[in-house]
Length: 323
Image (cartoon, rainbow, N blue to C red; front, side):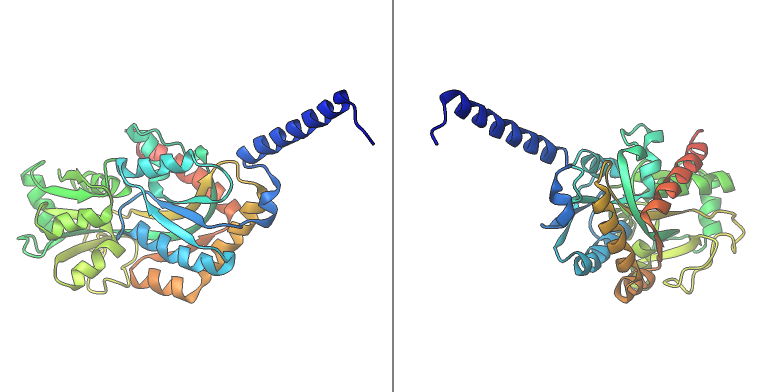
């Protein structure tokens, strides 16, 4: 059958319109591809340098998630701004499940320190770890105990430097908590992550460091630094010879957490897949062993429970950081 020019033109227009609609749908992440998710490799953004607690948890989780998802989960460290650079890149990524991120406690803190970070810009896919804080000094430090360090920082305000994972970070807040609880005036020095903060202490660039157990435990065992206290309610398995600050008479308990997150607007089918993959990964023996040996605590919450948890934490830190 021979078609008229008008009919042919109409068919061409329909095909073009259909293609345009499909392209728009795909651009918004709302196409049917979510039904067979995942069908390609996934990027997992870590907002800190390699080697720290966040990086360790993310890389261990990624390896385990690959078993459930049957695709590669590739970790990328995007550092700067106390984590705000990596978090910002995640918020601006396409909400299709192929760009995920390790979400630290700073997610709910940085906005109160002037950074353009909003916890409502993300979908949360499960908690994966809890991270106790520690305070340590270089191996050759004259301060043998936490009290000696605090006394020196009280007698000589703003002269004893303490490295941390960045201004506005949880370890910066932990240093402030120590100052508030003791009347000391430890001087915070920001770095792009816990690992470089510990390296600065090892090299004697600072008088002390506040960082997570997984970032200080090995250096403590190797004799490169001396951990003076764990800033938690309970001692850390990775530091059996170190007491808590509370046991030493200083009432400070503060730490971080880590979640898996994504840009807000993920398709429900993708959330369901990732929720299950995170649960399986955190429950695995290999993940549990690595995280526990590092001194951290494997801690899983479902995607739905994590959304509620973040809302509660955002309100808690808004109050803590209001001053």
